[in-house]
Each structure stands twice: as structure tokens, then as C-alpha cells.
Length: 312
Ligand code: NAD
Image (cartoon, rainbow, N blue to C red; front, side):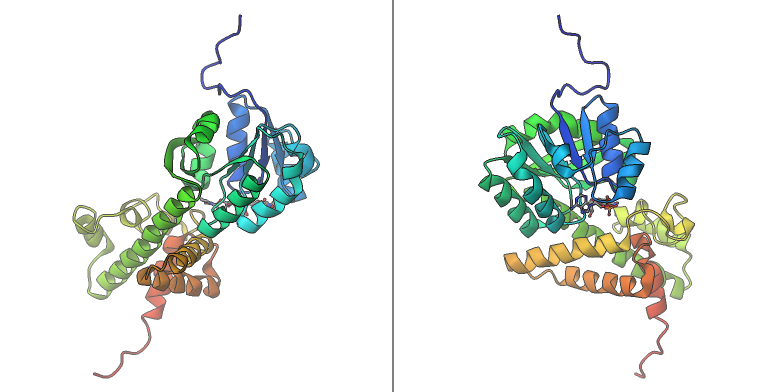
């Protein structure tokens, strides 16, 4: 008689190849291993492989060795080009029943190319970008936005449940990436609006706490204000109180805003605020601040306002 799975264990019995053991991938792979999933991990960086080994993950010496016999291949890589490069190395080796699950923020066009590569080889594939950041990956509380067939999603759902708290099936292939970049377009633009409001409030003699108290209980309320407040003080846990260290890097926000612009151009949509937001994060990056949390854009906005006013 088979034993029921232990509490918290995953009912999924297949083998998982996990490719990409960076800031997000390593804690995600570790969550799977903790849930009893047989994981074989791989990263092209020897340092990342060493960190994974130190964390107790079984690490393969090559991407082919990681993928051999896998039922699911999870990729968590910087961009679509890296995913396609990995697929080129392993698609020929995989079982016909394998599912490809790409969790990278690969963009809509990138997802199209990734799904096409899988389709050409006759393999099931899902785009499943995440939100929740490194903290969410470590705590297993990520949100997955999934594009692809419902039946393929059902096969990997126990894995997603081990790494996250919410799974949204957004629609056909590419819909997960569409949801991700649309969400981050809202976040990037609203962080700039909140930052401009605090800088303007300061210039008008309003304390950050007064503005926070009013806006957080009024129609200005949004995530950028209440969870990631760019002004130090009102929200002690936000990166603003720690020199904008850690959090969600401005460079990653810039990447997502550029993906949103590319998708908007392709779809014939005039996303002008998104275009402005991308330009503002480009300046933030060019100032050497791209590794800081994206709420640090308030510093950039404050400094750019010191130019002398034009005569009326
Ligand atoms: P990262 O740069 O820390 O990790 C990427 C890893 O991929 C690196 O270890 C790198 O060596 C490895 N890699 C690159 N090319 C490879 C290849 N060809 N074969 C094998 N390994 C390869 O990036 P991250 O912060 O973990 O982000 C991963 C993805 O998740 C990105 O698409 C990012 O936009 C997205 N994301 C990140 C966050 C975040 O807060 N960091 C939040 C949400 C989404």
C-alpha cells in the first residue's frame, strides 16, 4: 500500500531540471527540494553552481546531464535569449512527455519564440513569470502568471504550489508574460508618480508623514505608496529606510518597462506614460543607481528638480 505524501510534500513524482540558479532560481529550486521533489540543478556560472551545492541541491556538471530524463524543465534566466540558448542545447535530449516551464521575465515576443521552439520539437510549454521578488522566492510565496494550455498547467501545478502562493492562468501561450509586463508598467509609472508627489510635497512644506497619512487613506493609495514608500519614514520596512538597498532593482524595472514598450509598439498601443517611465529609469541607471531598489528613483527626481527655473 502506498503511503500518503508527508504534510507539505508535493504529490508530483517526476524529476525536475532547474536551469538558472541566480537570485531567484536558487531559492525556488531549494523550495522544490525541501518539498521532496527530485531536482537536478544547473547554471552556466561555476559560482552559482557552488552556491547551489552549498545549499544542498544536487547539481549537474552540464545542462544535458541536468535535463536527461527530466519530466519538467524549469528555466529562471535573465532574458529570452538565454532560455532559447538553453533549449538549443537540450530539446533534442528530452522525453516527448516533458513539460517546459519558463519562469523568466522573457517578454511577449520572447515567449513567442520560446513557445515556437518547444512546439517545433512537439513539447508542452508554459510561460510562468513571477512577482514577489527574492523574498517571495525564499518564503515560497511567489505569484505565478501562466500562459499556455490548462492541461499542461495542471501537470505542473503541484510544483508551482511548492514555490508560490498564487497561480493565475492568464490565457494562451504568452498571456503570462503579457500580465507580468502590464503589471510592471503600472508599478513603474505609479512609483514615479508617488515619488514626484513626495518631492513636490517637500517643496511645498508638507512633511512626508502628512502626505502619506492623507494619500494612503485617499484616492492616491497604491502599492508603490503603501508597500514600497519611496520617502524614508512613513513605512519603516521599505527600502527607502535602508539607503534603497536590496528590494527590486531599478535595472530590472527598466528591463520590464522596455519589454512593455516593445509589446506596445508591436500591438500598436500608444503607452506614452510607459515610454516616459522607461526614460526616467534609463536616467536612473545611467546615474549608476540601477542596482538600488526602484523606489530610489525619488532621489533622481529630487536632484533633477534643482535646475534654475525658467523666467516667466
Ligand atoms: P540572476 O542574474 O540573479 O540569475 C540568472 C542566472 O542565470 C545566473 O546565475 C546566470 O549565471 C544564469 N544563466 C545565464 N545564462 C545561462 C545559461 N545559458 N545557462 C545556464 N544558466 C545561465 O537573475 P534573477 O534576479 O534570478 O532573475 C531571473 C529572472 O527572474 C529574470 O528574468 C528577472 O527579470 C526575473 N525576476 C527577477 C526578480 C528579482 O527580484 N530578482 C523578480 C521577479 C522576476
